[in-house]
Amino acid sequence: MRKSILAGVGLLALSVLPAATAAAQTGTAWLHVRVEEAKEASKVAVNLPMTVVEAVLKASPEMIEKHGKIHLGEEHGLKMADLRKIWKELAAVGDAELVTVESEDENVKVMRKGDLVQVFVDNKAKPGKDGKPVKGGEEVRVEVPVSLVDAFLSGEGEEGNIEAAVAELQKRRGDIVRVKDDDSNVRIWIDEQNTQSPAGK
Amino acid sequence: MTKLAIILGVPIALLATIASLGVVVVDVREGGPDGNRIVVPVPLVFAQAALAVAPAVAPADKMRIPDEALEHVGLAREVLEALAAAPDGELVRVEERDELVVISKEGRSLRVRVSGERENVSVNVPLHLALQALPDEHGHIRTAALAGALGGVRFTDLVEVQDGNDHVRVWVW
Image 1 (cartoon, rainbow over the protein chains, first blue to last red):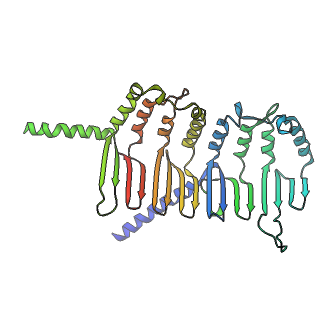
Image 2: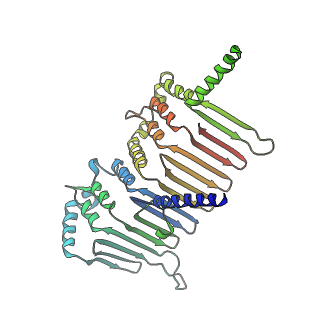
């Protein structure tokens, strides 16, 4: 009798196990945001299906105009047409270090590597009176797929195409933004997990 | 014998009918040795009837949301519809020293759980009920649609609050 119960429980566990694994891997793109603040001992994790992100972007009237297009216009200092032209010329160059700024306080590097545009910003920690670094350093890592910029610039006139950009993001897997400073860590990435598993940290 | 059957049968049949249509149960249990327990069962059909007649008895401006809120209704609807169609998962988790907040999508519901040192709160929001609770394009609350949607939340725990030894639970049976 006991053996039968154990066998039954075993079979049940085996039948549940694949379902539990499948629950994490959804086959849908999920946008993850993780913010950790050591000082406050707080951790915030946000996981949103890209379909929900798309719905939010489509329905935000202040940000997005009709049909998922966003105006850049001259008020932002750069015309969309100029941006398209610059981007086209950059695409022709291929892999290259596009911008390098080195200063006392900050190092900035923008480069194109394969199908990614990488932006690295290192804010140096200011030295204290004794010359040792004190708090205040910050590292920012942003990786933007070239195809995402292509999609955004596929709009007409002074409009960026958010709908196409979101569709492109749906295909992206991996890190998009990482910001690290003394007190906090921020990470934004896309994968197909519906949760932030330890492996994904 | 027939009289007794009628006397007992009619209320039992009435209760069975009401129960079969659903009952919202509010269960309050106070902690401590002198704590009371209050259980209030409200037939769902009463709540539905109240919602159905509300537009006729309530002032029109009370059945309408403010204009500043109306402009966000479209966004709320898009998000709720996208969430309803999305796979299950943990949407938000906030861990602090003395509190944990988790919002997850489980089946056709959004579940909000807040766990503190002393207090635990669990709220279950059926997505289709939330969608029906959204006003129409003129800002009018669609009470009839809401009343209809209430029938779909049967056998659902809506709210559970544990505060020290006190316990409140609201569910639809």
